Length: 144
Image (cartoon, rainbow, N blue to C red; front, side, top):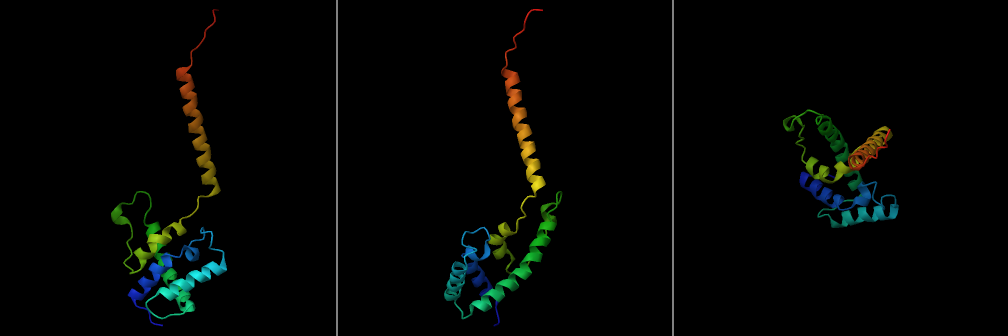
């Protein structure tokens, strides 16, 4: 099947409306029946004729183009880089896909980052409260 850019964008807009397919955090993502129903809904809504197998193949193709571009954008967003330094893909489907897929491709913090954050947060919490106590504390002195 030959896909035009318009057909691909129509497919992506319907695909976006079915997070059970693309969002692993969606509670229905692991339910094969619900995911299959989502593919059927997409196929039935499209203005052109296709099979679910063709849709899945097109999704894989689009994702194969999207992932390296997203990686290139993220790597260009290093600390200290200005807005002009950030890579801006000109691929027709990038913005449409990025709108809903970027959150899926956000790395989770590592354990050490989480532990460091907790320790630092706890330190500032304790420090803040100790300072407040010191400032409000009335010192009782005993004669020597």
